[in-house]
Length: 186
Image 1 (cartoon, helix red, strand yellow):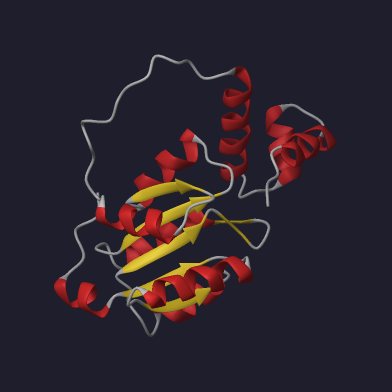
Image 2: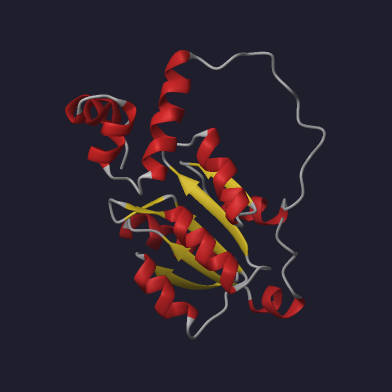
């Protein structure tokens, strides 16, 4: 679990948005700037690396899938290694238990499914400890959900390589592509 942000970082309120969808990144940036954050934006791991040479943000919002094939999990790991106290929230359009667990293991303080707004993200920054009051459900996961989680876990393991994922899952590449299209992966 990340260490709470230092007073200096919290006062500066420097936020890094790692998102390859320029329109969504602009919307988030404007919204956070209205809330008093200073915002940096990167759309790739290379840009993040360059920004980290000059800045140490106290907060980061990372999209799980960057530039079509790159994994935001690698970005989370890089950010956490750069500053363990950084509060990192992962956003994704196709959430799964496997990637949520991996994101937290790699240093994220929270994991949110899209669509999430600025209120959701800011609340996630503030909720860095677990909540024992969360209600448990008795509902089992559906086969479709389990299949999707297995596909996504394998996608993450192969760094979003469709051909390798299909091979590991024992399915034709086109079949996997159709399944991904049904889930509207962006």
